[in-house]
Image 1 (cartoon, helix red, strand yellow):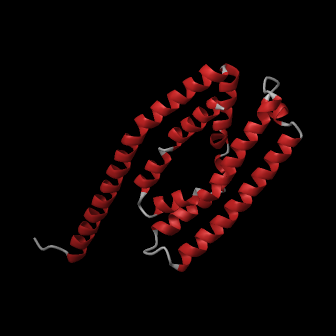
Image 2 (cartoon, rainbow, N blue to C red):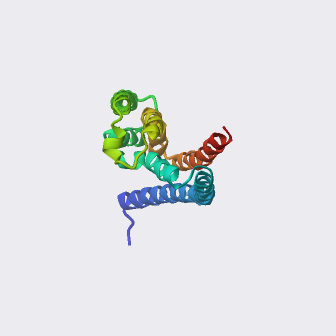
Length: 195
């Protein structure tokens, strides 16, 4: 039987892509396997520290504040996906399309973060968190919610780097960096208990 050059080229391409994807998946899974147990331990330690030092009411408010990011998944307005697509389709970070999409995404994220911050400040200054979150919410905790929202808003434009890393095929680095979060939260709570 005669071999077709186009079919052989296609098979070679599929094999190369499959190998590349397989390696990327293995690197990402390895990074996740490293960070997951460490994150779990630090999360449990943080929970125990808060419960022991501040009580169950404070713990419930802490879980509310840290879950803000989960209830605002729309905050990046989809520009993260556009950045991933632009970077993944390019051969260089300096290509005009990559630069223009990244700059436009950064502008949109800064605007979105600013609006979110202004709304959070307005809600805090009018004691509106109690109306939004319920009567059991302490008025003094509004400041902590504001701080949590402001950190989340600041992370929106800063998180563009994660999208670039994913688009560039460096997802494992993003996973490793993200794995530091529970340890940093534990350190912050540990410092707060010492004060």
